[in-house]
Image (cartoon, rainbow, N blue to C red; front, top):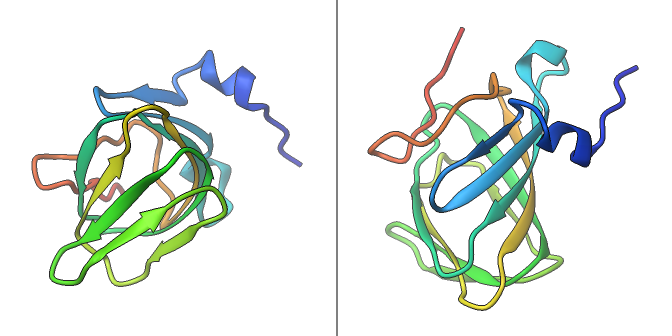
Length: 128
């Protein structure tokens, strides 16, 4: 059995921060569960280009509001209780509206190793 707390993981290398977001990676590839699980905070007033060419992701909004603009499709609102699933490696822009950060629960398949950040194309690398 694995037991971790968000507060505990925030004090370790499992917490990764950029100018647009902070991700606390509670479950990683090294845990051998076949997926990774993160609590990610998207900072208010930011826009992040994301394109997970190597991963599938599902995201559940816990708090805050924003929107996801899927390239060549449309823009969808995000608010608490919204789940979006990037089941086609959807390239998108993720925006958190001004006034409040968005807190999201994220699941990745395949799992990430923990230190990944988006490259210039919004992609996480795939590590063997």
